[in-house]
Length: 183
Image 1 (cartoon, helix red, strand yellow):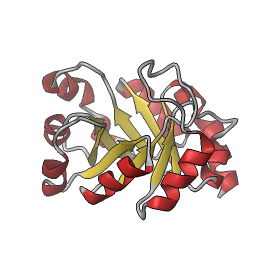
Image 2 (tube, rainbow, N blue to C red):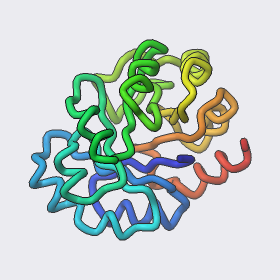
Image 3 (cartoon, rainbow, N blue to C red):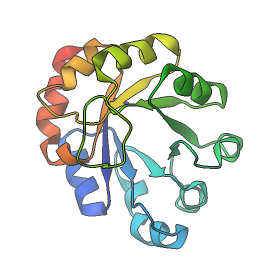
């Protein structure tokens, strides 16, 4: 779970995997399940764990490895029952513990720093908040929000097992090198 590339299309996912991404997450806010299934064809052939964002139905139809659900997204119980790898979002220790309690395999913690990729994001939790979340749960924690090659190693040193990126996905090789150097 070292490097999650959050992408909207197969071409970008391929490039991310070639650069060292270990997880590709298909994320298209506002897309229907049918649209996600259409766009997601081919993701399962990549040499990486394939996760669909926010849509258990699309994840099942695509035979994805998992689904990532944010706060307010339904389907955690179904995802676990269907054998999908479940990721949940957390901006606090309480939310991280709730994710672990419903059977999440990992928690996406953040935003660690402010991010232009999600204008409606919660306030940044900083490395201190990330460290608290990492210490509070026994499942892997993936740092997200404002992460790039210059600060990815800081997230690993704070206790995260990996990072997730949207904006910095084009710099995957440098991100992977920073993560690997911190381990």
